[in-house]
Amino acid sequence: MPLSRFPAIDECIEAFRRLPGIGPKSAQRIVFHLLSKDPEAARRIASACSALGERVGLCPRCSMLVEGEAGPGAGGADCRACGDRDPSVLCVVEEPADVFAIERAGGFRGRFHVLMGVISPLDGVEPEDLTIGLLLDRVKTERVKEVILALNPNMAGEGTSLYLARVLKPLGVRVTQLAHGLPMGSHLEYADEMTLSRSLEGRREL
Ligand SMILES: [Zn+2]
Image (cartoon, rainbow, N blue to C red; front, side, top):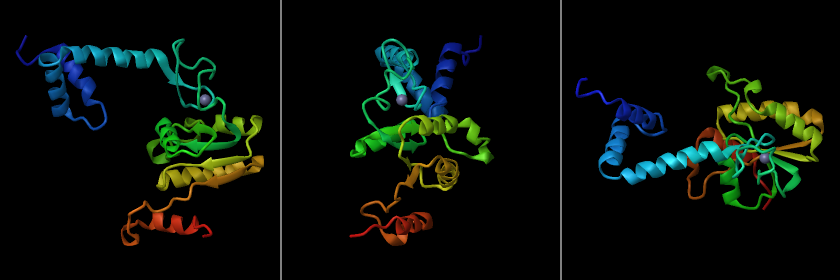
């Protein structure tokens, strides 16, 4: 076998290389580091990653992450986002990470619904590929009075919000959208047009 062929090492480098923000060189550095300097870290990473697969899943109702000893997705029973929260306000986000961001901001006591992406026909993502059907079911069967669309302020997020507003409003629910304000400390002249026009629209009384 040539000296350059080490299937186990190659497989490990390939696995790391697929992670976001890690290129082939970083992947190789990580693997060589684990091999020669910190074999204990390799065991910790392997066991933490396998626990992810065994214990973390998606809530069948809201698609937020659920973690439980019994295994993922036990009927949503373990889902904290569906738990003891105000059912009348439902906040729609793109990814589970967005739920963490809104929770960190504090002040929101309603429930969440994770779309698992945005509509993007160019990337082959149609409404049916997202959890929009589940969202409509929830609005019909839970006591939802307001749906807050909290998607990212970019073209795909805006398009998806417009689509959702169109399918949600006939269900008799109030549909609102986050006011996309300017970040604190920023300058008007550096703001992109969409942020500026959205923050104008989202203006409130002082
Ligand atoms: Zn849930």
